[in-house]
Image (cartoon, rainbow, N blue to C red):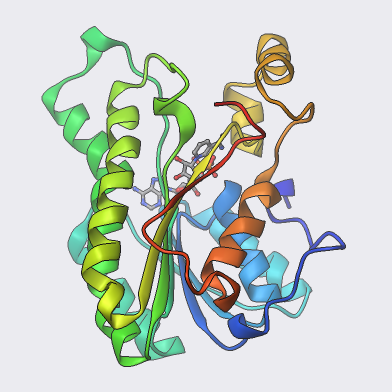
Length: 262
Ligand SMILES: NC(=O)c1ccc[n+]([C@@H]2O[C@H](COP(=O)([O-])OP(=O)(O)OC[C@H]3O[C@@H](n4cnc5c(N)ncnc54)[C@H](O)[C@@H]3O)[C@@H](O)[C@H]2O)c1
């Protein structure tokens, strides 16, 4: 088990309005998504998650089961719209209508300007943006029929902080804000709230393996107002809040959760 799905630390709030709701988290097999999956399960939600990585996803399901929690895993490549639509139909049949959607899946691979091909660009926009729209499209009628719902789209502060070697990812993550505002306006009449979360640098197992080094640790301490590394629960907690009725009047917003980096 990685620390991306460690059991609930003490002090996390319980939201009565989340109990029994069906929550779908994309990219829930590892990283921030795995923590979000576990935290929703701990709230008494019926949780489904999509991921392309089968081994880590099955390990998460097993880790949840050890703690008497359930996660419904669907292997989905979220760049494939037909796979998204078919898997959402299976989740609906297995768990009931989805009223919480966390559009979390992404891929932040770095790329040099001159290495980007047309195919790479299309893939990067697909894995970081397009699925957020098509997942929302596939669940909004369920939410409307249930009297409302919550959609949380994961963006990133990276396009605000001067990141480099990542133009396609930055483009997609800034577009998530526009998508959020379009969907919030369109779905508000059905009491569907749509918000985005812009994480700062969240230290997951992947970030530690690929990008965090001594220089990175130094930059965190220099750039953040808060003098500590952020972890997946720093994002999962506000996501729970935004999904709950405590955030019942919050929609059309973008929440920066970065320890004060930008
Ligand atoms: N970790 C950070 O510092 C950070 C910072 C800013 C924003 N974010 C955003 O937060 C979200 C979660 O970040 P993370 O660091 O946990 O990411 P991650 O890369 O560790 O995890 C993403 C998950 O999505 C899955 N995934 C990737 N491609 C997929 C595909 N084609 N089909 C299905 N699943 C796929 C991966 O297998 C993985 O489980 C992302 O939207 C990311 O952009 C993260």
